[in-house]
Image (cartoon, rainbow, N blue to C red; front, side, top):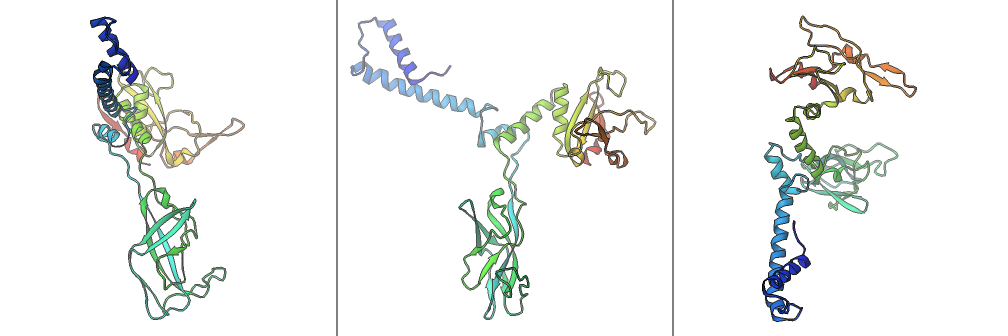
Length: 322
């Protein structure tokens, strides 16, 4: 157990008293207190702090940042990286004289919650009297010549996702304005510590041959929306009781929005071997009635597969890619 500075001082004083008796004066201001007890206590406290930091950096629950990434690396996992927001903007000029050159890396920017968001042009464009003319009568630049260019946010993440018209400023003096005619919503943030920690736990759980372990294993596939695991001794199991066999029923994300709940609606033998079955997926209505999601069967994306720990193979596992 790590001790506080006060507890360390008390422990040293108690040990001195135990070894040399009560006649040793250890009060604040005495030689033994100022020259020995206090400096040694601070040194031990610093050591405890370093030890505690080392423990936390190696603990999956408390590790953060690069420490957590090192733990993830031992499981073959890397932190998901964020992306840059990109989109088109228009530069306008009402009376271009000659060629107005807007080079690549020209800065344009927006303000979001009073924070400046910087973007740069990806390539060079030119505005002149041969350029298109803005014909939207509601535009503040109606009648102006314009050129469009792709811009990219300088910072990674959703900070660069801006709404229509947010980008209105630039460092180009010989144009009359700049404007984004579309929202930028293609940037994502880097994976958070909590999400990375959960990815590690998923790997750990997937190696645990329990119902929870199999569920975590299936959920590692990005196409899976929800999972039900049916052990061989369950009354809903599709297969006769065989040790080592387990049914994993997955609902793909493509239909997940329609399937707040699902039930098993029987078995259909599609091959000579009773391995593949169609599961009826139902949407639960407010009145508790059930509406079949028929296209699940029509398009054969019931996503049922069986996993055998003895065969160590996936049967129809490709259905997870739907």
